[in-house]
Length: 372
Ligand code: IPM
Ligand code: MG
Image 1 (cartoon, rainbow, N blue to C red):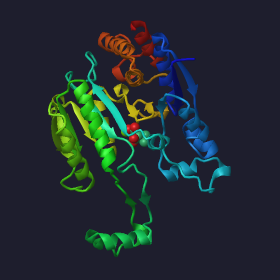
Image 2: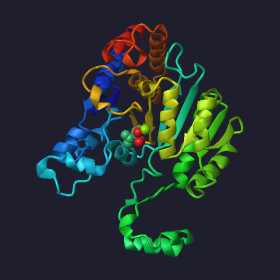
Image 3: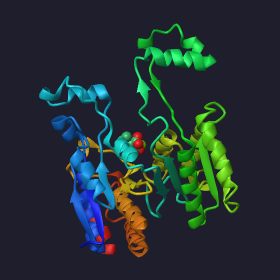
Image 4: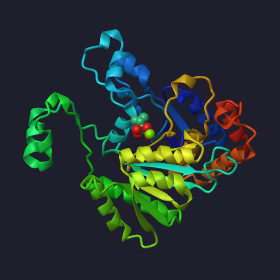
């Protein structure tokens, strides 16, 4: 029996292109693993009315972790239009499979390293080394949303909060509400993961990015919990910034930051910003980590216009494979892979189009494999 069982979910668009690239380096590393392919994505939404079929959930439950390619997520009305004719009007509602996976498998922490590798011509600066910790299951992604606003929800809000009064005269059909739900447990968990990481990798600051001056209860809870946890880690400084200012600081002085921590939506935004500082989404890896399961996916989307063309940069996926190896505790393999990636970037001979090159997705993977 293989040492690791890995669910293999290419998903949509270029997902398959980058997963093939991942397989090339995994084979070169000789990882003792069995790969179990699973269905996920738009095709299954169109045909079955479910982008994440139960058979796929079952595969995940039988594995140690999942490697995931990319996913197309569309707003619900657009999604409904693309359903097979016989499924239309039957009450199928599209929801993002990746968001569902994060919630169902309690993958509470999304780890997104953004490091400028030497020689990458797209680096904003060469001395950037950021790691974003994004809360992954709650906040504005909780999915508790209303439109129109149900009358009893309106009544309850009027009864419980004086600031609701100014919406009282607005027709219910003209009000949409998305709940930003934070639990103390999830706030503590993501902050603690960040501190543990900082301690392990000897990073001396953590920046909590919220907006507690305005969003007092949710952002406030997170910042208050962060302060408490910080007191247990005297070797690591806690810096606090507001999300808007942080976007400015990250453009002005990204090199002074190290570990960043935020809630789901702000973490989503900030991690794309950080990705662009180190060469774009083609270099941005990510790990969705829970207590019992983990799912690894590059930060980028499915780029449908490039699907199947083997054009896109596989580095984000190869760095994601590195995160998976870290998670397994295969430190030697992870280091060999990262060194090979760094050498290919530095040499600059085999580059995809985003870097001004003509190499294919798989050419880059094969070059990394050669350097392993
Ligand atoms: C990401 C993506 C996802 C998100 C989408 C595809 C649902 O943007 O992983 O950052 O918003 O979390
Ligand atoms: Mg995103």
